Length: 74
Figure: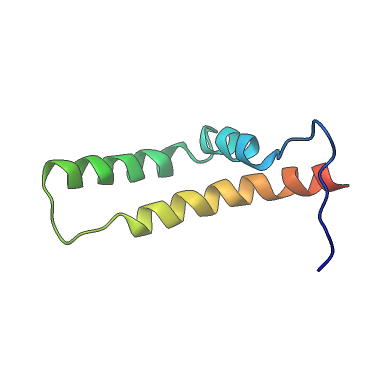
């Protein structure tokens, strides 16, 4: 298997871009729905999960982040 080398001082831009996208107005309502679900479950534990809300939020984040990440590779 070939060795993967990182350039000195290089940093993975993905976490910062995902954070920025997660804070964007495009994903705000989905983030709020996910956080509301988490709060609801914390207050009243049940068999409900927040998987659907998480997937919806992460889809928005990924949709926002993908072109920005590809631009960094070019």
